[in-house]
Length: 116
Image (cartoon, rainbow, N blue to C red):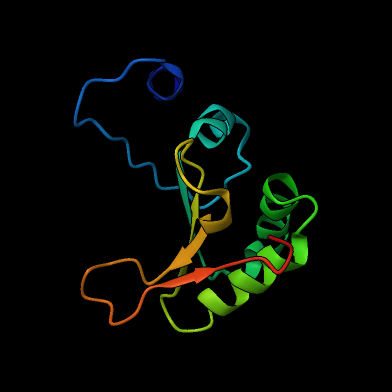
């Protein structure tokens, strides 16, 4: 776990280097550093994780929780649906929530808040 935290918190990473970390519990104490330094988070439908999804929404969209929860509900409505949360520093804040992002997807979906 220490090496994971070190890799997530280093200021400089090698070019073309990415870490993909898969977890079933975003609020596990030992992965807090990884969650706080993630540039992208992908949420999938998991009925027993409703509170965790809400907590992520409260943390990342404190004044727009309903917008976040609605985007999550729409994105995960289909089997294997997902919501991409883009936290990259260079990303447009209005375009943080997306789904169907892959080349073969017929249409890309971006969830835009009414308060933008």
